[in-house]
Amino acid sequence: MNRNEIQSMQKGELHVHLNGLVSTDVIRELLGKDQSELPYGFDLKKDLNILLPADSLATYLKPWQVLRLIPKSKSSLGLMVESAFLNLKSQNITFAEIRNTVVYLASLNNISVDEALYWMVSAIESASERYEIKAGLILTVPRGDSAPDHLRALLTAYAKLGRPNTVVGLDLAGNEDIESPSETGPIFLHAKYNNELKVTVHAGETGRIENIISAVNEFGADRIGHGTAASKSVEVMNFLRDRDICIEVCPVSNRLTNAVNKDESHPVIDFIHHKVPFVICSDNPSIHSSNLTEDYLEFFRETGSSKHLHDMYTNQMNYSFIRDLHGN
Image (cartoon, rainbow, N blue to C red; front, side):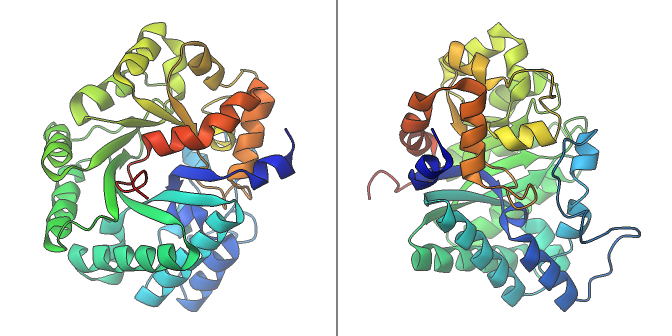
């Protein structure tokens, strides 16, 4: 399959971070507009993009030294969401689940989590209507000691706003070597079963295969973000297959983070062989100077399977958290 064929295919996007989807030109514009003080030695011309495999996940995350500095106003958030939807539209994406750490948005703007969530939901709903892209918001919670407090604050805000349909799920993310308090998992489970929020967990991206099992058993994960380490164990792949847990495969990102190094084939080949459910996603396409079409192309280079690409839109719909996707 060629780029034009893939470009024209209808697509869904189930794993993309807002700040990594926004055009880097818009990022630079907002940093200048807000007169943000950049970290010492950070070069906006080259350090905002990761174009070659990083030597570690920490190196890959360097752009976030400045990405976490925006937006510093409601209007700036609107510009970011506008840019994100323009990028989605350019890839013929008809539905998307966008991730954001709303607690950081609140802190950055010195507003309540309730107001920050209202800002985000309003911006996404407005862009969704204008661009005719169905959209859901996944609330990201960083691993660490503050995870339970962040999660409680988000769930309280979600309830105060009347449980908006635009909020479709929760995400646990961040350094997998950092432990979170034992109460974190039960709060995720409570939110899943009492608020009907789906759960995805960044797990097994840095080789910690035990985090994949924990994500399902302790946090109630319906999907696994990246999950590259699953291929190291037939038992784990069978576990995911039997539980119908979908892996969010991000081919370009996986190479650039070195979750999959240049000398090994991508684990998605093993997922196909063991019938593990998966969808193709882009993660942080603007940071990669890439897009979802490039992830499809990378998948095709790795597997040679056009069938999986033709089936991908249906799979993305089946594993999406967006509630009314099939009804309309």
